[in-house]
Image (tube, rainbow, N blue to C red; front, side, top):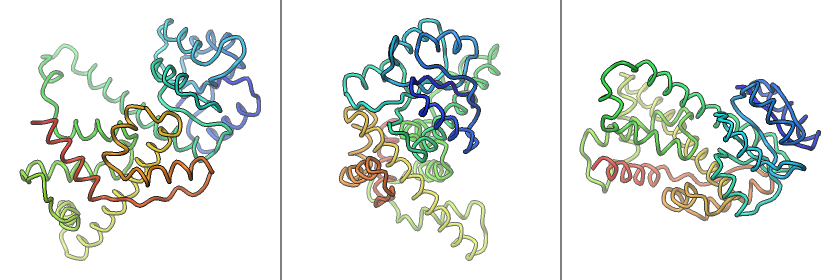
Length: 291
């Protein structure tokens, strides 16, 4: 990924550059101390992502984004902010900001967010290539009814986990449930779901058991990643639409609030992961979408 950093604080620019290069997340192709200086450089270099400070002299982050959008810049924006103001946050999201990174800058938070946004960027790029490859063919495939996997991937993308390895396991479980026409409740035991999925690629009982446990761990880590992403959203903007819908529906809000406190205190990000509830709610949402 190609990054451009706009921040009037030299230490922040240096820290972000070191994190990006040190974690092999991509390349920083340019820097600027304010929006006025950044705009011509960004339009010339066309980075994939612009990491931009909210509050800067001459031209603040939101105004800079507006001008870049007016100039038809199509890259993505990640806002840097020490101020948590709901009106400013809402305006930033309305201008197309994909995510917020809190100041003072935390290496783990930066790596996590940039990894997720990079995965989403690659997914969008892949979809664009597919659309271009279909140019000249009948348009029906592009307007066809969405598949179960499409709906699942859309929800997982909203939670920022479509790039997690466990997202594939989750998608396959929902596809199996839909194909077998299970009633909404009760769903089969999780152990049965894992084993059914494991039997697709494994044959012996020992291998199936081992793969079942691996599937459970992958799904657990993926759901925890979703909880952390939503907690980050809640810290920045408690009224964010994704946070308001997914946090109380798919998870226990007490667990999400605990994660929010841990993130704000820069502590270990640990929480109880309720896989059964997550699968149940996701299955219910998919049934509603395809019915």
